[in-house]
Image 1 (cartoon, helix red, strand yellow):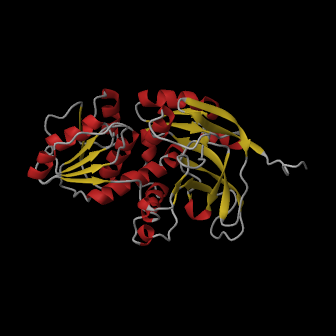
Image 2: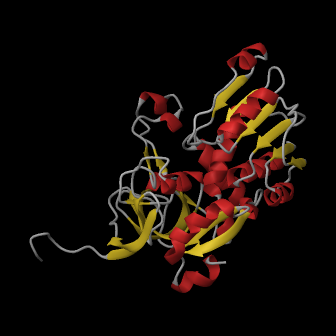
Length: 344
């Protein structure tokens, strides 16, 4: 033992060194403190947040292990943990909230003042192992497909947005944007018996939207005629379109976060009595619990939006190519006995 103390075991991880520079390299492996579990990560989804970090549109503490949509198997259970066991498959809820601040006590955990988001402002899940507070490791059935498992977290985002909007089964609902989040939202609406009319400029994405249960799909919108509108892209032009085309008294729920500000016609908002509502992630634990339950019971298969898998060694390529993929891309970290099961 040297002056620096005992060396910790190393593991491979996808580390964002600077905007546009992602390296897969060895980093110290985590331990397993009391109240935590050690998870062998099997897969991590790629979403708009990852792409925003990679492009430099969002600040981050470099170097940063990316990834927040993850699942894996528990390899160690720390002291003071009940209800979880070694070998159990889990989805990781990456937004760690305190549960004690005023917002958390009011049920608005998405706005927790002490929230730590793995893969955004703390090292994330795109690594061979991750130490996770037991409260944020959600058991999954062994028979679940890797595609479904990797979509649990973004499905919780979609379900939270639906909870905020409260669409009715007979209501005309529009979804602007058929990226992976828009597709998951469409699939969730379909499961709830709500017909979604999807708008996206890409035909390949619209075809996926129809397979996810969209009632109709169009490359552009000349009129929304929808009393409930979900904007999922975050693009300034899409937000402007939602406001300009929405009918009087419509609800517009904003899910996507863009890197350019949108200029809104406030007069239109006022004269039509439009209601704009942001929907940030989800509330802990209810929204995430619902996503886990729907997927675990086989009632909803979010994995249908998954299009392409990349090995960890090609993580940088995965982020560069993801914007052009119709559907969701993800990074598989499965090796050895898990490789055949979780790399498809």
